Length: 407
Image (cartoon, rainbow, N blue to C red; front, side, top):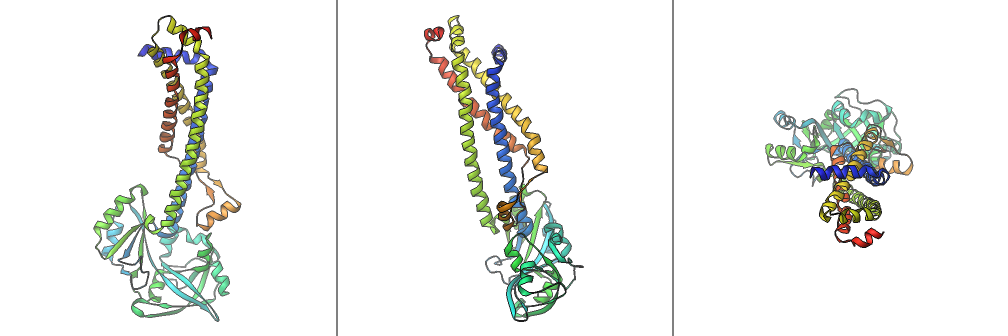
């Protein structure tokens, strides 16, 4: 076997031009496949990460039945023991307590339905970077600030500016009538138009006082150290808390986003499959050319006594060498390119940027950088090369020796 590998390696460089054509086919195939898959995975990761960070978190803890009936009565008490149980889980990096409900916002004759989000300013800002959304005024002064932040479209509709007073009316905990006047502390701008039209942020203490829901929450939003351990963390928290709580993962809460990512992934795989077909035919063309060019050479070797299966084995090893060299060189060439775009995503403009911003996702084209991309694409292209290599093996086993010598 060792002699066969030596002969195959020497044959490879006996005609460098022919070998380099085949290696180049594999090289460009692996380069394109890795770049395409890296871009696809990077986009999916960005969509998940931004949606999770700006809204639900990876996991949420609610009172039982809250997700189906989002009323202020379906809240839970924020006890110290419950908070410790959730935050002590090893994979949980941060817990965001929130109190969310609905209200009527009014300024004189203008009234509009709004969503109220009560949160702890420092924790909220560390995750969602809410302070960076402030385009006028200031962020919350402290955790007990009684001012509010609202979207710029909502402020424009209600004709409100910094320092103006907004009147809020709602139903509080256990039927209590919630009403209050609050100064506008800051005006926010979100990429998603619906958030600009509807959201009002308060400090958690102010929201609890407004809804008469002392020390009560609608949710804990959990951020994770390692998102790959989502299922395990979910199971641990679900087992540790009582049946009066419902634990949900982000994909259960954002079904539409999950379906969009899955459908995009399927279309991405389809495009990748088309690329693989083109690649396979490109490699097949070069190997077909190589086989016909060497037909006389193969005939002479068989005529002087070499067995066909041994010749086929040598040719197969040659193809294996060319495939491996093509995959290796393609992976080496793609690594710095992928890493550069992983660190420096491509900024998007125009309609594409607007469409992404409406989903509250950064308008960039990111790349993923992981060993899985290199291993999977390299393995697939290598397998395609080996499948294509079956043609010269079949050709060697059955071609006519006399016509080969005369060619």
